Structures are given as C-alpha cells and as structure tokens.
Image (cartoon, rainbow, N blue to C red; front, side, top):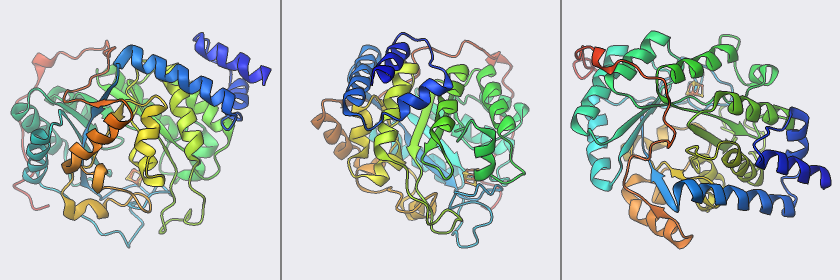
Length: 372
Ligand code: SF4
C-alpha cells in the first residue's frame, strides 16, 4: 500500500513512474483507496482545464473494407463473413448535414484501410466538409498512410488524426497483428502526424489477448513520450469471427483506472469515454466521464450501415450512442453534473508544428464519379 501511495505521489508530481512502478500501481486497480484517490485527482484536473464540459464528435464510419488483417478485428480483410459497404462523398456529406443540425462541430471520418479511396478522394472530401462547415473540425481515422498522404490531407484542412497504437510492446504487437504490419511504422506515423501539425490521437485496448500489466506500463510510457492531444482507451471485446472469439473482454474497472491515470499524465488531453466502454456496460459513458474523460463520440453513420461496422461483438450504435438521440445523451450527462456542448472542442495546447497552409493545392477530384 505504501509503495502504491508513493507511486501515485510520483505520478501527481509529474515525475513519470518507471515501468516496474507502473506495474505495481496498475496491480492496485481494484484497491478502493487508491482508485478513489486517482479518480478524484483526475476529476480535479479535468475540471481545472475543461470545467464540466463534454465535447461531442459525430462519428461517420464510411467504409468497412480493410486491407489489413488485425487478428482481433471483425472487419479485417480475411473475414469473409463481414458484410461490406462504402459511402459515397454525397452520403458522407449528408451525414455531416444531419450532424451539423444536431449540434456536432467535429466530424470523425473513420474507416478501415480501404484502397478504394485515393488521396485525392480524401482531399476532396475534407475540402468539401471544410468549405461547407468552416466552423467544424475534421478528424481522420483511416489508418497508416505515407507522410506525403498525411501532408495532402492536412493541407486540405484536416485538423486531427486518430491512430491508436494498440500496444507499445513489440512482442505483444506480434500476437495481435500479422507479419505484414509493424509497430515501428505505426509509431513513425504518429510522430509524422504530429510533425504535420495535426492534433493527434493514440491509444490502446485494455485486456487484449496476451496483454500483461508491463505492456500497459509501456503504453503509458509511450504516451508520455508522444504527448498526443487525444487518447482513446477502451476494453478489448472479442468478435465471434476471430481467433480470439473465446477470449474474455477487458476489465471495465481497469479501463476506468487507466482513464484516470492518463488524465493525470496528460492533464489537457481529449479523452473519450469510448464506444467500447459503452458497449460492455450500459453506463460506460457516464463512468468514463466520472473517471476523467471529456469526450463522447455518438454514431452519425447511416443507420442502415451501423451494424456492418462490426469491429467487435455487441457494439452499440443506437439509443444514446446514436447521434440522432443527442438530447438523450445530454440528459444523461446532465444527470451526472456535466454539460454536452456545441463546439469544436480543440485541444487547449495546440500542436506547435505548423504547415504553410497557403501552399494548399486546388481541389483535384472526387469519388462520386466512381461507383462505390
Ligand atoms: S483494426 Fe483497423 S486496420 Fe486492423 S483490420 Fe480492423 S479496420 Fe483494419
């Protein structure tokens, strides 16, 4: 207990604990005294920087095709049972129209690594959204690309990029991904995105197969080094069409503990109470916010496709998880003392790297002309 207390003090003082200290701290995630202390400090910091505001992002899952084969993922290329879909530019813009009316000022364009969409398609899409909704932020979450591709999207106006690293441990990464994928490349992408001036989001799953506390400790150390503006942490949830179908889901309590730890480590970070957390437990969104999170991402994808974006079993996308029920979500947040806001919700500390945005090229294409 004394040992854990000393580690918490170190964490609060901003002296990043060492890997073995993190492990000893994480082993206390069910220790009520330690958990209450960590949570209270996380909430204090969250209120200091964000008051009681909860930012919303409209999540548009625009393609569930993917060239990769991450072993845990329900929409990986090798899953022949997945029912595939792609949205056209017009369909995506329709989601934005709907979202804007509902009060969303950030659109998150998320998809598998789908080679159908060329760089010029993404550029055209980003430009169209920014032209129509200049007061909105555009977040991309479309995986690993080249530096040049990231630069084109950024010049087109993309503000943020989400790319969870999933695990910062090489051996653990190999248990979850095929040889064709590389942790080193993924980390490189994250650093490149930062260099290009994006607000960058990293993150990892809690309780993924083979994960040990020392792996999570490495995730926390990696986050301290990268200093992303956003961190996505959600429990692992098995998908029935994967080799991990029979694995247990990650612990809600450990996920909440980690949200609090990350809030202390990176006090101004944008930290979502994730869909995965909301999927494993009905009050996951509220518990996430009460642990220090400050973002929710309701689903703005066309209702007819929501079930197809089937990353893991029982993924929620309706009810309060659906953008069209924003009011219901607002009421739930109000009931725990928080306020759903209508604003972009940028990171308070901007990425200091800047691109010469004046050099932005003219629009070069669009994919409505091709059949999706
Ligand atoms: S986790 Fe992402 S990159 Fe991996 S297979 Fe699924 S959609 Fe593709």
